[in-house]
Image 1 (cartoon, rainbow, N blue to C red):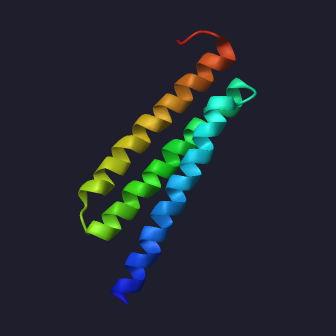
Image 2 (tube, rainbow, N blue to C red):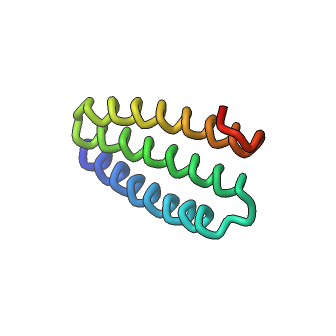
Amino acid sequence: MKDLFLIVAVASLVVHVGMISVAVQRVWRGETIMDRVVAADVIATLVLGIFVLLALIDNDALYIDLALGASAISYVGTIALSRYIANRQMF
């Protein structure tokens, strides 16, 4: 059963990396700034998923702590960038 879990987890990691490459292309060639912001947020979410999968594979809680910290930074960054785009000023 553990072997099946590892196979599924590694396959999920590969899928996450593939989705990140698609999102990076969207950041690179996005038509509008909002497309790029959403793609950057998707990349951050996928990286969080990778951290959680690594925590499950390695059975190490350190990756969960990294995911929590990265999610807080991603949230604040998305809010700040959205506010800047809406008002053309930071604060």
